[in-house]
Image 1 (tube, one colour):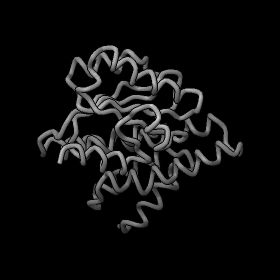
Image 2 (cartoon, helix red, strand yellow):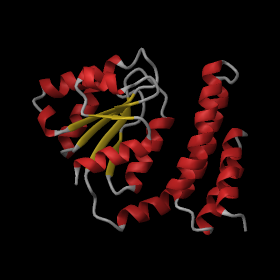
Image 3 (spheres, helix red, strand yellow):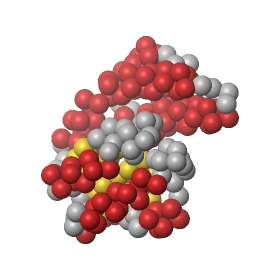
Length: 216
């Protein structure tokens, strides 16, 4: 049987080679070896996706490559998800988070990783998907009495829509009831401060740590 570092290395390789079958196999191997799904995702799949994203930004990879990589990662996550859900069921929900990729932006990999990490950490996560209309965040947050509304923007041209979430929550008279979190490649702490968001999350680990801090 492979050791932990070998399994994580193979997880990276599966994503880098866009290999759905290999990604599934390594997910099963990781579970059999007792590796926490969050570790495999963070240290394996996420590292590979970050590298591929950098290559995409540099123009050495193209959108079909990224889609193929996402498909491979999703194939593995589909295997890991039941285990993660069982882990979440073992503890009482720590809070409810509404999350989505901002309107105008179809990228979802980073948001998906954050949503998964929050579920593992014991939160009830309602994932609205990608290209989410601003009003959907507000409506869902009010409907389920969410504790946090989180949005991801992967393009500078869509970041402005994170401002609109703040505005519409205020207009709905609901802003004081929730905390807001923003993230995504072009998003910074300065941007979060500027628009009035409560939390800037640099990555999934940062998101979990900062939301944990709200409930301590």
